[in-house]
Image (cartoon, one colour):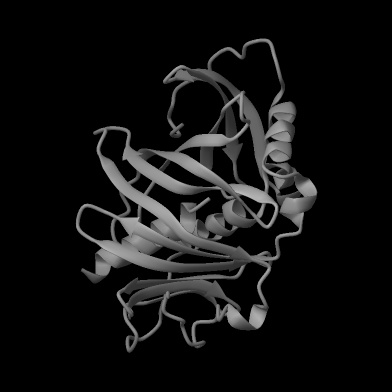
Length: 261
């Protein structure tokens, strides 16, 4: 089951806060520009100043997959460092992260550290971007956003923002024009390329939005395989904290982990 835990850790780190290959972009309806949609979204979640004030974040999610349920401890900092530990009860069964020495994995408390592949490390870095930075930061960080059009889903005429990251990764954000929350996003990626590099289109539905440190974020997600319609993963944030004393984060690979309470 270790490989399964690693897959969960990777997915949680990469996308914890549309598929590529959606075809040609639909004709954009008259209305707001991409910058205007992003500005309204950023204001709705708390504003640029609140987002920019986030120095670090710690999320303790419960992750449910068909084969098992685990609890994670995800930490990330604005300087690009992160770590996620996976627990069953009080036993740490998998960890991975990015520290000053690069990307790493450890399949259990006593196992040796293994370097992540470049693809896996990039995905972990994406998780830092999505958990600590806002859509208003995109251009300054080398990414590009454009308005892909509108799409009706379950009675909501979403604005669709296409994100092209500097390294080539793409994600499509679905912004509700009433709440200005990103309620869905789509991407095509491997759940864990270190184990299975097959890329599959998936949609993540976000809900239960709550404010933490002045920023509104989803506490519940449901990830669906867009080809089969099957649920791949469901997560629930048990707690979210931010701007903690860096000394308690223990992000380095040789630092002690703290089991979830």
